[in-house]
Image (cartoon, rainbow, N blue to C red; front, side, top):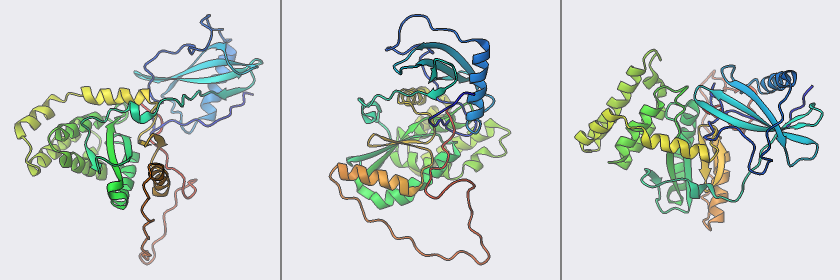
Length: 344
């Protein structure tokens, strides 16, 4: 029986982990000698164990390929690469396997040298809040992701209103197009508005995140969803008096180059879920509850020499007669709601 330790989570409903641009292979620190192949029986045991252990977050549609063994830095263990893929997306996950083949552990080497904020290109991105604030919240967002909708609701208007000029919020595109058919289209339309008007972009983000089901319709036609997105973008363009010709040309062209570049940037940062927030460099994954987000923001403010605002008092509203509070099964108070499980 193989024993697994450490946690492992994919990020959005039925999506696989984030794609890695590099093919599977030994790390730079490992020997360049060829890997040692495993027996078919041991490969089968490892794959079955991984699928069983991660059954709640590893969809059947994700292919699991167990690779060869390489020397590791841990005495008594070898390094094992396991590639998980779905369509064109793939991610290599590292494990270490004991010499006797009976113990498997998740292996993660974390480089703490680079500051994530220095690796995120914010040039030209729409900003909400104080553009010169000392605390920056960057959210890698998917317009069609239900958990992004929850995170958007947490950020706006409550947190944005509470922190006011102390923070700035910026969205980066990270659409999971293999499970969200209109997410890239929505990102392109939003960016078409952003090139001309910051407020138009944010109202588009508010409306789409606030009523994803209206865009989805009955989910039988991607064309209906993209048509609804284009109409919304056009209506907001008229509301904010942008150049209509330029906007329509941008919408019709549907150039996703910038969106793809943002996805690639997220991949390099190890983004594996939507939403993924970076608050002055500290990562938060999933639709985190407001209290958890506040705690990270307050810490970042204090580190920047800014006093956080007082905690807002909640109004004691009585529920309607006969109403029962909703309870989320197996979700203790204060826990993070499941991020969009694994990436595309």
